[in-house]
Image 1: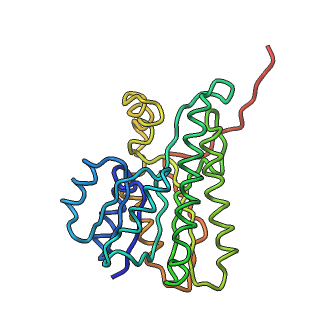
Image 2 (image 1 turned 180 degrees about the vertical axis):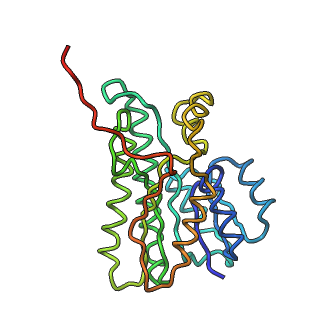
Image 3 (image 1 turned 90 degrees about the vertical axis):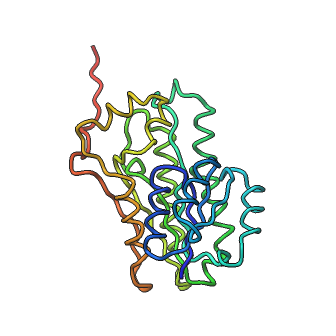
Length: 247
């Protein structure tokens, strides 16, 4: 029975991924910051899930938790770097520096750090890495400044990992979703109303859609690598170029 470590399982795509992988017969180590949600997910999924409570930015807490994994969950075959966030929609000149650094620390530094820690055993087990990027990695938009840049890093880091890991048997995939209705926009704006209006009438993708895609990638034969996978709801596409006209 293979084991997946999924970061950020207390909401959205991470939570859906934990359900999907357990449902497909995997064991899952799920990390998150919210103890109550971890406990609820543990009760729901049972012995196939082992939860770890820590903030992915806290390397000491992460290492202590991983080093104390029970024997049944020690061998990690798949790392899903799901934990991440966006904060704010202001243009760069009005954005809070604290929001920028939080996104960088979470979306980049923490992702790189846990990947580095788990690489030796992923190589030993000929495992896989799935990194959650975004269409924001590929298509800039107003207010996307640092968030989009962090996801561009995730995409490029994934491709560069593929280059370095050639010959090891480790597969790496960057999954790049468009509009997925989760708590993402609520966290970004602090407003449920803004979130509801953004997704209204769009028929956006769901967390379950992306979790099913992750499971599909993980279940491909070991000689096949999905380098990058971009997904959008049918009702989302690319915007025209912005043009400023002098008055």
